[in-house]
Image (tube, rainbow over all chains, first blue to last red; front, side, top):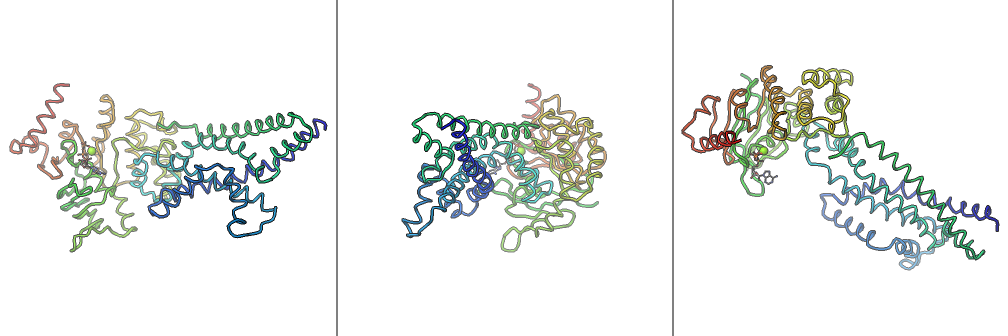
Length: 218
Length: 259
Ligand SMILES: Nc1ncnc2c1ncn2[C@@H]1O[C@H](COP(=O)(O)OP(=O)(O)OP(=O)(O)O)[C@@H](O)[C@H]1O
Ligand SMILES: [Mg+2]
């Protein structure tokens, strides 16, 4: 197999990697905010449930969560799910896992905003929702960006876990080619491609952090 | 004379611990009232109750004849409906000890955010009024800066401008100079004196005794959550009957002499 064929095959797997990455990010970033609100809710039941959910998501391997989402329905309800479900299983598992991580990051950010900011806003007549969107959220975003960047880079690498349930993304491809050709080369190329992907992600996040660098937090 | 604020028998306790034990205070239009007292006596709590940052445990608070909070026959404290509270809230402003400016907004935006999005003032008008206030504070050239680039004294002047643009009927200050280096204190005190000269109604919690003596129409001495003495500066500083006040003032002046 020529090197160009090899790279072409890997790149076709990269399409799936990118789908998992972007869909997870686009859904879990806002969902995490909802989870963070539940985690900080005044309602003890909601707060308790959310706490358990987050601790399970963070306390068990993502690979295990993938398997549970993919095969759980069958073992629990004897639900027959076609192979088309594979990719959805991956996306569901990734989104609920990452939403939990993002929620904890957001919560840390929200709780780090001094009480005085809320009080000043209240005195000036800002209502609850305006206080959050105009005063709290912009400061939270700035504070959480570095942690969100870290998590996003981990996500690029985590996409390779999709191979455990047979979704063909870049890592699955690399494994297939390596087996067929008895060569290390596909892994090296895959590694380079992951690295480039992450480099682009880090570059984008750095731009975002710069955009919020116009003031300093004390 | 028109009464701006009327607090009657206001009590506040935190988890059963009494901090205000029945404070009655009324402030008339144009009056400058200073509140003094030792640390932990309840001065901040009094301002926080007056500005709705804390809920009172009993008593009543009335602004310009409009009831903000009162106690019913069963002893339960009732606050006015939300819409009424929103209007009453526009009667007062509060300047914090540590400014509490919004760090992600420029100086100009800090001042105009509330008039534009809460009071629905046109942006151009809000900015014009903000610039007038900044000029008065000697900060016109800082309009585009972020708070982190300003000195404490400058930040405090911005926070005063931020309160003033809402045109409050009464402005509360909670130790406005306590977080400042001594050399920056006089600038803020001057701003407050100028406001007093313009007949701004103000209630000022302060540890600056000479300033309180200069600027106030009336001084209130709080001790253990109660008004222990009050009167014009001459009367209060001349009071030799009240042991606690005497002790407070002597310890105070003793301290400044030692410095
Ligand atoms: N949120 C709170 N919960 C419990 N206790 C409180 C709370 N706020 C204030 N207190 C208590 O109330 C008392 C009065 O506090 P306050 O801040 O009003 O005093 P102060 O006169 O402003 O003192 P200082 O001169 O140090 O600012 C203190 O004993 C304080 O511990
Ligand atoms: Mg205080």
